[in-house]
Image 1 (cartoon, helix red, strand yellow):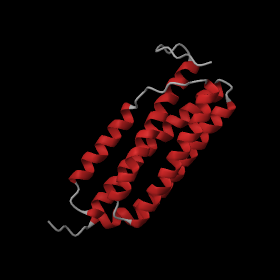
Image 2: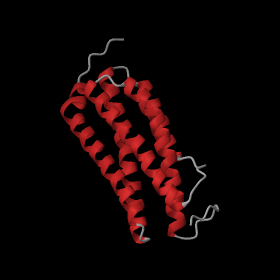
Image 3: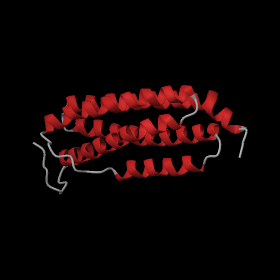
Image 4: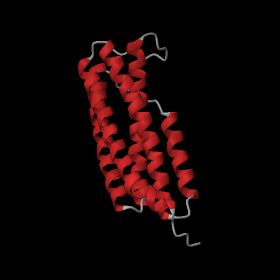
Length: 173
């Protein structure tokens, strides 16, 4: 059973608290990605971000299984870290004067979010395994693997297209 009090007294409480934070992060990201897809100039970047949006939507559904198992019914947390990432992305993008530079900026911001999520879901999987919650551990691990796949694709895209184009943009004021 989940402890819904505000005090974290054990690893189980910590995992439940973190999972509520993860779902808040996923929902915030799901709400931001469509706008970011529109901001992208590169068709390949748009395609990867669209795939990422699909993963994020799947993550939200998978997390519901965890909440059902843990009997967590109220999700009232916000994820301050994700909110900061989203705000930072918007601020940086607004300063980019060229579409190629904007793509490089957007890709870098999304990779920072990706790395944060890889870390959090990897830790959650470890916590769940330590608690003997193999089903939950596999949910968190699967999400971590999705994040790593997107990260790898973004790295390839950055190296072979986006960063090269951003290196020497044609600036038209």
